[in-house]
Image (cartoon, rainbow, N blue to C red; front, top):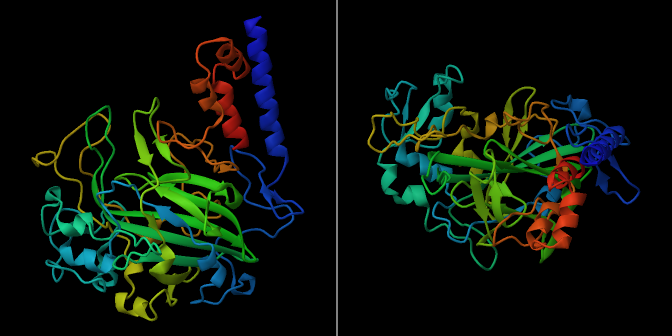
Length: 433
């Protein structure tokens, strides 16, 4: 009997999966988007023109150097963690605390001491290959948390969410046929890695670039995406929580230390099973990046970066073409013999700094930056409902959370039976988002 039941449940989910493949990502008569399939979300809309990675001039809708007002109107807001120790920072000030090194640890002549932001364009010529990068390396011991690492003064103002000394970075790309991608980049001087089973942190690195994407068609937001640990989460714009004072603006939650971005409050497990690795988000200070930002447009066809006046007119020219730098924005992974370095089965304490915005696959057609190692089908699931966090801080419930409320009585038995011991919830979430 149990075997027949298992086959029946499996058949239902396979049927739902088949159905999910049969409907393209589309817009209904009210303009609301719905999905085609979850394993590999379609890159097209059946009644809209295709998104183009590198469109020709005749296919574009905005001129270089122009930021449409709707990009600012729908800019995400970010809840920093309430006890966040490593806050946003100004990249111009950040690099003055660094020097440049080759991948082998040799200081680069002419850049041995404090850098200027305009030096980064010059340093790009030293980036040989992806495995032989230039490393922007700290002049002081970051293990002692100097001020440029913590950014402790950069707390958003309560009145408007502005961080006066830490501009965000906005890059707008025309994807042809009325499609426009707005990438909001958030820079933090340090990434505090996660703790694993009470030990850690592991995976610390100097420099931390996170970002979100809002994808528009003819000025209407359709899709949002937010980065987390080299991957991230994709959502239909309508699925995300909006700011109570301006319902155009989606809310993102930045995790403690790692600054990974999520759509809800609570504990978020990632990469390893059984919540071995987890991030934590809450409703800490609310940051409004649109109050202070640098703005650019990017033409990938000719690799052209164009200054586009951000919140402070002509400030981009003072920063120069730093975006061209494809090296590492932080120290190289510490040698195992360094007393500050510690080994664990999952990661060292200190790892390489990240590369910058221009390396984040800005020409992508799928909203997702890249697929994780386990995502062998290279899917990009766009959710229609926020993936609710777990733990005591969570503010909502997904299907699987019902089992936590059910106790040990008949109701729990019924739920476990209907959801195939909870696995049905996982499949439904995967298929239906």
